[in-house]
Image 1 (cartoon, rainbow, N blue to C red):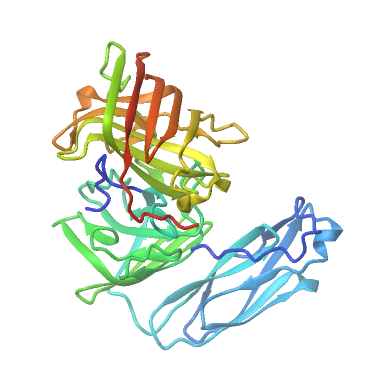
Image 2 (cartoon, rainbow, N blue to C red):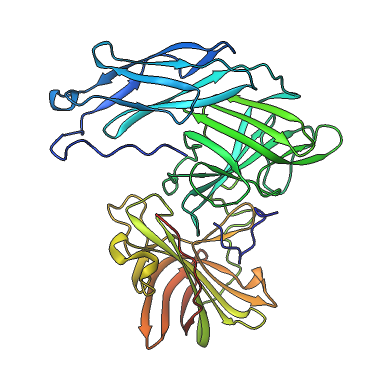
Length: 438
C-alpha cells in the first residue's frame, strides 16, 4: 500500500480567497460568521435558498467592502450577496440524476465560511453508510501542488493505515488540499470539494484514485476491499459527505456529521520504548564520499518557512552504512527548488512557539507506524535500518556547508538518551526533478 511508508519513502480543495480589494483596508478586526444552517437540503425539484450571516468586531472601513460568494456547481445559479439584508440568495436547479452536493463559499477579507448544499435525485444508492469516526493522518506536500491528507471515515475508531478492526467498515480518501496543516496542530480535514482523479496529479481539490489510496474496506463479515471508480467528497466545518461508485457498479453514499478533526493514530509518541535510542554511549561518525538526497518540500508545515527534506547514505550501492535524515526549515526567500543550495546553512533545534522557524530543525521522533521523522542518525544494512543502531537527534546544532560541487554536513547534537551525536558527512547530491509547488 502506498501509505505503508518505509524510512526511505518520500512521504510525504479549499477555494482560495480573492485578494483584498485595496491594500489600504484594515482587515484586522474583521470576522464574518454564518448564522443559518451549514448544510441546506433540497428535493429533486430544486428551489431557492437563503444563507444569512453577521459580523463581529467590524470597523467602518472594513464594512464598506462587500462580502463575496462563489460556487463551482453549475446546478447552483444566481448566487447573489444582499448587503442590506446580510444574506446570500441562490437557486437550485431541478435534478433528474443522482443525489449531489456542492459548497458555497462566502468571504470578506481573510475570514470566510462554507455552506454545503445537498440535493436528492431520482437515482437511489446501493448502500448508504453513516460514519461515526474520522481518522487518518497528514503527509504534507512532496512533488505536488496540494497538501496530502489521508482521511478515514469509519464506524469504529480507526487503528492504522495497515489494519482495519474486525467489525469496522472504512471508506478511505487520499485528498489534496490547497491548505496544509500547521506544525504540531490538530488535523482538521480542510473544507472544500474533492473529486476522484485517475491522473493522480496531486492538484488541490482532487482525490488520489490509486487503488491503495482511496477505497472501501469492509471488515464486518468477510473482508472486502474495493477501489473507487469515481467519486466526490465534500467537507464543511461540521460534516463530510461522499458519493462513490465502485468498479463493480455499486453506488455508495457516505455521511459523517460532527467535528471534522481526524483521530490521528500517528501522534508523536515513542512507540513502546522510551527513550527510542538504544545507545548507551556517545555516537561518532566521519563519512567521505557519501550521497546527499535533498528534496524541496515547500511550505510543508504551513508556516512562514520552507522545508528541505535532506537524507543521506554512506554507500548508495546497497544502501548501507551511516544514514542521516533531517527536515531543514529555511526562509521562503531562499528561492525554493530553483536554488539547489537552498538547504545550506546553520540550524538549531526548532521551538514551535518561536516567532521565526528559519534555520531550525524539528527534533527526531518515531511515529506509532514506525516511521522515523525529522532528525535521525542510523545505520543501514542492505537497504534496511538497524533499529539497534538508530537514534533520534533531539538537541544540538546542524551545519551544512557547500564544498565545491558537494556538501559537508556537521552534526553536534544529542539523542533522547543524552548521548552525544557528533560527526561529519561529506558527499555529492543526487539531482533529480522533485519540485514541490507552492
